[in-house]
Amino acid sequence: KPTIAVVGRPNVGKSTLFNRIIGERKAIVEDTPGVTRDRLYASGDWLNHEFNVIDTGGIEIKDEPFQEQIKMQAEIAILEADVILMITNGREGVTEDDLFVARILQKSKKPVVLAVNKIDNFEMRNEIYEFYNLGLGDPFPVSGSHGLGLGDVLDQAVEHFKSLEEEVEADDSIRVSLIGRPNVGKSSLVNAILGEERVIVSDIAGTTRDAIDTEYFYDDEHYTLVDTAGMRKRGKVYEATEKYSVLRANRAIERSDVVLVVLNGEEGIIEQDKRIAGLAHEAGRAVIIVVNKWDAVEKDDKTMKKFEDKIRREFQFLDYAPITFVSALNKSRLATLFPLIKLANDSHKKRVQSSTLNEVLVDSVSMNPTPTDKGRRLNIFYGTQVSVAPPTFVLFVNDVDLMHFSYRRYLENQMRKAFDFTGTPIHILSRKRN
Ligand code: GDP
Image (cartoon, rainbow, N blue to C red; front, side):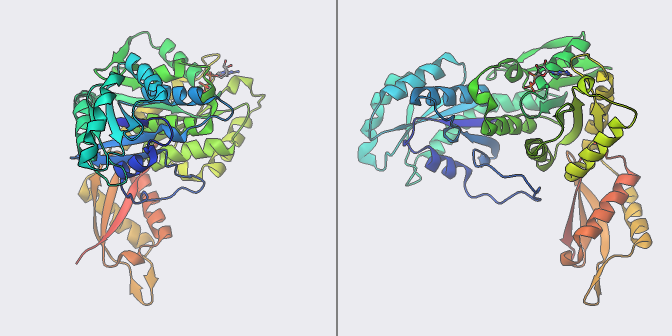
């Protein structure tokens, strides 16, 4: 999905427009405890195009001067978005700060859509012309409070990401990203992985993207490491802020098939690791847990097992994710990663035959009868796989309320035994059959 970033100085109405764009959205299917959903990053759609929206205004670093803040927001937008939506205030006209932001945006090659907000009625339309001075193309009049003009703005944004969508469709590689809190060794791992592979095809320079991804081949399989440029750019203050790292992780997850959740073996697991891992799980991606810096850990023959047990306890929602221990520094055990990525990706895209699936369901029910409630028994008529990535199944039943969590969990385990779903979440939904 392409990403739109909303930028602009305070009080131009960014949040109102952001909320208008994303509309009212229901929470996702399942909730992972400990994961707070941040409104900085949301999804929207327009004319059958789905996209993500970032509100850069929500990212603040304390104690930085005002101009530094808006500069940072513009930089994040350039780094993270495919299309930038710059919002200005038609009632105030062009300000110094608008010019400042516009100059930063101009230097990037990113497409910008310029919206002039607070144009609440037709008479005010003349106010938009001075915004041509920003050098960002045609200004679009909008009214966040009245909900006017947004259609034209989104039309324009969609025009910009059409070419991007074609690129993504043409991409048949396995897209892999690395997420984790700062300093766990993501950049080092990226470099180690790419150093391992002599056959790096290229940094992909997309039509509307910077060279942010890197392709490589391993065992005749085509991979794309997502977001490698972001990993190479280092040292900015804001990269250490929690909100930014969450946004960055979300963005990488969104663009990948397989997510490597990187932990620091030396420091162990902290709350932030769980939050980041929760994002990958909620997005329904294939997940591998990678414990890095294993060289720095003093160990005996039980250390690995102990660490594994700890991960299983702390990340119960990721019980399907394989775990591997590596050292980016010594480049040791990296070879364990590649087969796991392939395996997880295969699981994520696996399709099972309806006949086999239903045999498994019948066997499961005969081994462990369905629950009853007030004398009524759950009856599963049949099941079918409705989609992949992640594999999603619909079970047709007599009454969805009778499908208790624990029984669904049992069926999931049975299905995991019958088909190899290592590395991928699977979703099991129930529907009433009339
Ligand atoms: P990132 O913020 O997750 O991208 O982390 P970096 O790749 O920048 O690594 C953070 C620090 O950890 C650097 O000083 C690295 O040299 C160090 N580091 C990375 N991988 C390893 C490893 O496998 N072992 C050890 N001992 N240090 C590592």
